[in-house]
Image (cartoon, rainbow, N blue to C red):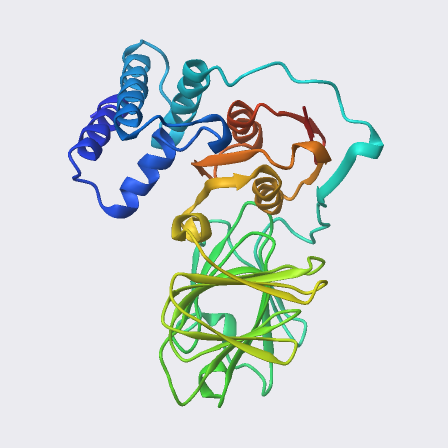
Length: 362
């Protein structure tokens, strides 16, 4: 079956409600949610369905043309975006490079010691993981052979890579690009299972009520016995986020404890000493671990903050474009230039690349 046939089958399955909820979510992001909310006003549900059918028909017509096909299914997100742009007239020419006084730095590229995943023990031993490794089972790995008492292990993830760990206690952890993760080599034998995160990680914690699992960050800690959650806390950033998918966690910061329920996210702004609790979109929050960026009417500045961490780039922007919204699902294995082309179509913002620096211009 060709890519075009596969895509049309997915569209048919979507229309007939045969897809799983997670697959439906991806298709909706690709087909329906690309346009910025402030430029896409539905008259009513009937009008929305009519426009949706036009979009689908336009995509199918584009597929039928004899053009080279890319192998990735999600290439068609670009086709969908282009059709939305053409249909609703959202594209216009961009202005010149912003002046220095109107420019803000959204993210700064980091100096990395290696482009490979590094495992370092507290005694100084360093192991560089083979590039094809994406799951490291520390229960059966030689990485932790004969660890010294009180030894710690630190794993560093470079740009455009991520790693799924199985810790000695059976807990599963996904580490995003630019993340540093530290844990005790005797984790499964200690009264408290304590790990440290600088970056972003998703946890599926093995239940053990007698041995709480504690995640320390720069500004807070999260304590659980068994649950699934995402935590984001980068050095140099003044906030930490914890989003709970399943179970219950205690979020501790500034000597205060907050209980989080499934489907809720806590954001602690350390510089302002404020706490905000909100509902969150699971796909937007956790699809990174499955290899996708998922944005659901996300501010362009927040989009580029995520993009910068994955590609390890410095991002500068005109401060007047911070209200632009982005929706869509994009594979993280796209070349940076391809991703920026898609984002440009959806945002009417130009992305100028200068070495490891990307400048947003309107």
